[in-house]
Image (cartoon, rainbow, N blue to C red; front, top):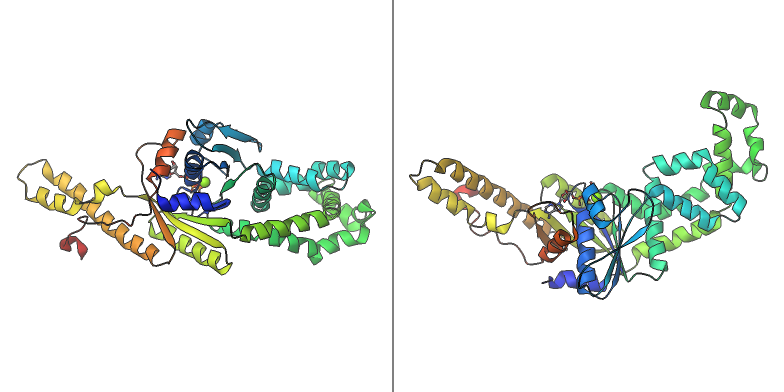
Length: 373
Ligand SMILES: Nc1ncnc2c1ncn2[C@@H]1O[C@H](COP(=O)(O)OP(=O)(O)OP(=O)(O)O)[C@@H](O)[C@H]1O
Ligand SMILES: [Mg+2]
């Protein structure tokens, strides 16, 4: 059984960006929603993921490197599911291949040492390619729904800002300064005395590489800026929904709250907040009463059990308070309990997906007045 709100989310969206604080289950939920969408709709679904846990990646047939799109077989599904990992370096290379004005420029950029360092080592180099991949997937016409997993919290915002930053980069004075003196004579800049001395300190060709890289990169200004603008439009499109995942931990919720506000400020379509890893209701319900009953029992093995039930009741009380806070944000809320065992295969993902529910949680009997102070 699939929750009605979850079903609506999966049918109405063409793009779902899953974001949230670190370690709360973004990658897992993105994959679980992908499985669910393939099972319950007739859509061709792509899940673009960033950093699946190794065992999950292996189970899904994803390789550690490369951008390959891997079909995932789901028995009896109406739609189809494809998974792909976003490999930053490979994605940049693809982008250069796409936008380079000619083969010579392309090869020079790809071989440029600075380019290789920038694209493989810098964290933010990831942000832009995520949006590029998204756009590519969308443009390819091969998918009806693209679910995108993002790296933790603030960098989800930095992903959203990436297209604009790319546009700004091309119009920046720094870039003009770096490339203006020798647009056509790339190496003349690098042959100036300053560069020659600096080269000796920083290593052969380093600064020459800088000048060469920026000059070559500028030849792609038009297509890249154009693309960045369209990618930006896609992120703001009404069929692009944002799903903020969080646990009910106060620290995670603070970050999630910040994300929700920022998404609203940018007028993005916040779809829902998914509260993940909640205490299973079967454990929370009645915990306080059970603790009281146990406390009155004469059985000698009971104190430890009573203590455990009391701890559970206290945790449930705290969780109930946090959930109430999230409900005051004014967004739709989905709930997902902590599942037993590792989530490392399709069956576990499918199970997790169907367990996501929009039914408000009642923590009845988790607390008594005594625990309430
Ligand atoms: N509902 C759940 N029940 C049980 N385990 C879960 C649940 N959701 C996620 N997990 C587990 O929590 C761990 C972290 O999940 P995941 O990798 O999806 O988080 P993430 O938000 O993508 O992390 P990161 O910010 O590091 O990318 C994984 O081991 C995953 O199996
Ligand atoms: Mg992740």
